[in-house]
Image 1 (tube, helix red, strand yellow):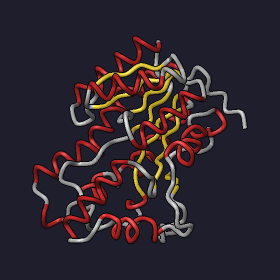
Image 2 (image 1 turned 90 degrees about the horizontal axis):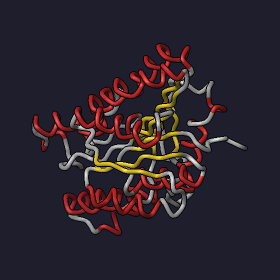
Image 3 (image 1 turned 135 degrees about the vertical axis):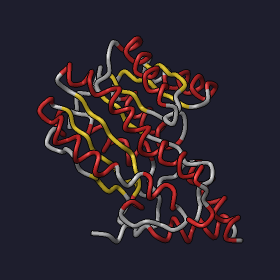
Length: 265
């Protein structure tokens, strides 16, 4: 299927490692103009250098979704280097205290988590969507987790804080569809990234188990195929489709991509 993404101007947040970087690399191969971002300047520099070997139209800047002013700076930067923005793929990291059971969390943890997963995303929408309305076309994809459908006690912060994005996408779809703008949520299953391994290592320490034991128990054994997904090979094609003109009738929905691990209907 020809998706005609060449020249599309895309911002991918939290895209210097893991899920975000896999998506960014795939979109660079598709010929998109791309802005990557991270809270760490050195990671941004290295990622831009690496992706420009695939596609010269890649730029990067520091960005922290929990700092609302950064959204304005990200938009200005993207507009300066690409001439505008057609699409935003909203990826986020994890709260520093995750994985956490509810009884272990503080109100400071909750304040940070809600900014990271919800209000920071709302600020991105408010910053970028007016440009899309003006252009009469746009795409916004919110990356979330299968655990929104099946909350896990050990991920209390993340699972509660990002669940409202499914409602947000519905509301925005009904509001902006007339401008050819779509909003969708991807509920991701397990993907092999360093971030995922760090999370399981912290969980293993908390549970008093080995990393290998818990990786098999919590990750591999839960997937019917017994193998884990790859961000670039398995997730990025779905993102690319949702960024294309061919996805115009997919709007305001949440899409599971989890290898069949979720029990919820």
